[in-house]
Length: 227
Image 1 (cartoon, rainbow, N blue to C red):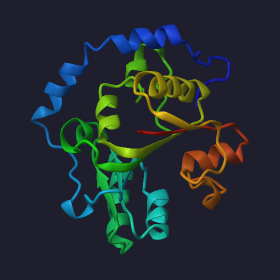
Image 2 (image 1 turned 180 degrees about the horizontal axis):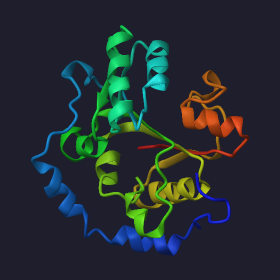
Image 3 (image 1 turned 45 degrees about the horizontal axis):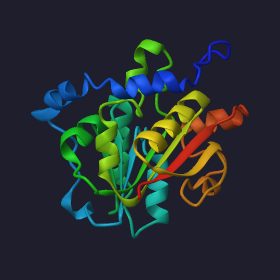
Image 4 (image 1 turned 90 degrees about the vertical axis):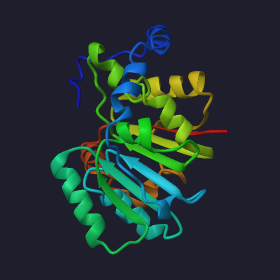
């Protein structure tokens, strides 16, 4: 969480400059080309059924969603070693055939592993906002992975993003709508919506969200659709 005295500012001119600067994209392609990536089993790869959560922590949210949606296949990915191990253990012990936890790097999965038009939904809940100006290239909407992420969505697929940082969601809204032409379904402070499942988790979907809501800190979201 950022100090309240130092909030980054939403700057469309800066965003447009960042979007034109693609010097790192080819290097990312080359870097991940021969590296291992998280693999989703073929049994999960069915049209209109695959949901992915990036930065899933220990997997509580997606395990619960898998119970509520047995007709869907849910994959949760977490890079952190300890949380990733707990995620994998949770998915192995819960007994749900439609839920899989993976300890791995979602960036590698998108760069070389996940095929276009594979995912019905992508959830990114409370990612690191990378608030320093020098680190802004790591934000999901500026990252070299973003074109792959958008390509991985099926037609009419959805991206659900949430953050406690208003600037982050404002930037993501601008990039998703202006650069990628995604249809904006919801933008602003979080509230129940058929795609965010917030009404099922009134205390919060993730530990971060639970903490923010308990502290009455505003949280923001963006829900977009690929046409």
